Length: 206
Image (cartoon, rainbow, N blue to C red):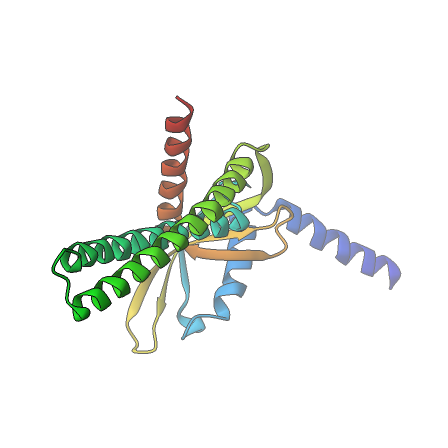
C-alpha cells in the first residue's frame, strides 16, 4: 500500500512538472474564473500567453501609488479652476464704487480664492512626496515577482450572450495561485501612464 502511495505521488509530480507554463496558468485561471463568471460551464479558453512579471512595472502596489498621484493631479486641476473662478469674481466686485452687496460678494470670492490656494499648497507638498515615492520605486532594482498570463476566452453572460474576455492574470512564481487580475485594456493604460511618468522624470533631469 505504501509503495502504491509513493508511486501515485511520483506520477502526479511527474505530470505536474511536465505541464507547460501555459497549461499551469490555464488551470489556475479556470478556477479563478469559476468564481466570477455568470455561467462558468460556458467558459471556453481560446489562447494563453505567459510572460515573466517584474516589479515595479507589474506590481499592484506600484499601480496603486501611481493611481494616487493621478488622483492628486485631478484634484489639483479642480482647485486651480476654483481659484481662477474666484479670482475672476474678485475682479468683478472690486472697485472704488463698491456697494455693500459688492463688498460682501468680493469678500466671499476672496475667501474662496484663499481657501483654494491653501489647499493647492498642501496638495503640492503631498504631490511632491508621492512623486519621490514613485521615483524611488521606479528606480529601484527590477525584481522578478512571478508571471503574467494574457488569457483570451469565451463565456456567456447572464443574458445568454457569448462574450470575449481579454484579461491578464498575475500568478505567483510557483504557479500555485492567481494573485490578481485586470482587463488587458486597463493594463495597457497603466503601462502608458508609467511611460508618461518616466518621460516626466527624464524631462526634469535634463
